[in-house]
Length: 546
Image (tube, rainbow, N blue to C red; front, top):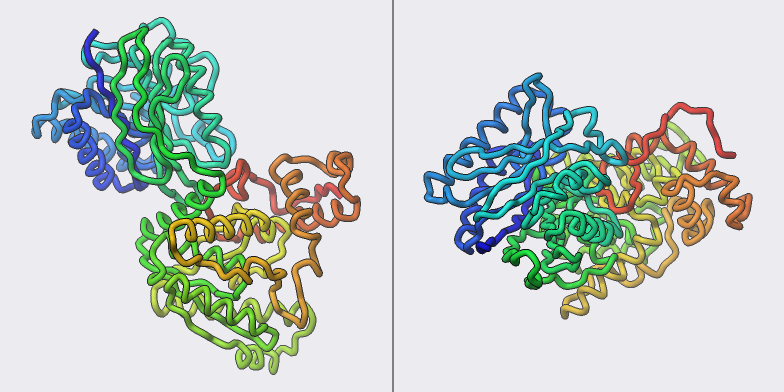
């Protein structure tokens, strides 16, 4: 049986940058050929980026994707790489004009085979049935005299169908192109699934995944290969480029173990998902710097640390906007944070602005408190307009769930919200992880310890803390997890032993805050159910759990 060396190209594409994506593809093809690979495999929708949503329906976009495939094949042949087989995702079109989520097999300067994704996911963040037509035919190509199967992402998540069609094809390896978004705990599920499919086809499964941020989705990479018996024999790290080369063994032989990426904890993966999401949102949208309010609290501290890791501390502008209620420790913690991460730190007191508004409006109570918060948002937007920074919001999922955030204030305005899918207790966990990570590398911890340990407060009135209005965050987040992520109703929550008064308060807050959530900036999906694409509820609704 002939030798067969495969290469998995884990790359970060950009939606709509067809020329830039083609350049990445060609670069990785050259590198794979130099390493002696017979075939190089790329992620789902490589030429176009993913997900492309309604761009798929535009004929001009369809034509550009088709030209890109032809040009890539011709360039490889012109450079003497025509013997290399490249399998990559692209946008195809049916004879009736319907778009396909397609894989093409290139060699000899031309497209040798096309495979259209069979199973179109229509749950969670996915809406592919609305956009794409479904394929029906399996795809088996010959590479180095060996039968090689091709499938796309969801095709291996469904029992029967694609994999069943390939089960009796005598495959040497099954290549799977993926655009699988990150969520905590999903890595084990992918591997277990691939192991089952490997058993079905009696051959190794090579799973190559996209990485990078696209709006509110983050793709984590973590490409891998499982042997015919289900063992991981090669694995790439997450949230980075990788070119993984592996020699496919003859049928019946033991699979060689190649490089295995170091273990990454759940905290580590969640943190770098937030960094990746912010970095790619900033850079892919043409920004080079960000601005946020630095209050000295934990949310702005973690947001600033993520921003510094994403684009460099020198490209982060932190603005302290003290009022008459701001404590000395909050101002000191904000200045300390900025120094630790190397941010451009500024102080813009708001007392005169509050006074000017109060001279005209004479607000009291919550309206007066919210005036302070909104003026901070105005300051950030003003500096952003003047200097071109992207405003980022430091609000977290617990606040967003309960509406415990002043809309249009410094915590909710802007273009991106790095903590949007992290509840408050998770924010503390990741802050501690980031500091420990720095210390393990002999670096200065980016987040002041007092920002982690002090009681959270908006400091809009004397002695205010979050727990004046909300249950303790440990309890709140437990109820929110059950109600939001697991869709448990009041009856189920009471059966679990939660206090009725707490349940009624939390559910009422969540149900009444949908209008605020609709106006909140996008942020990276980290959990199994994020606000936005994952959870689509009407704003106007009389349904209440309480």
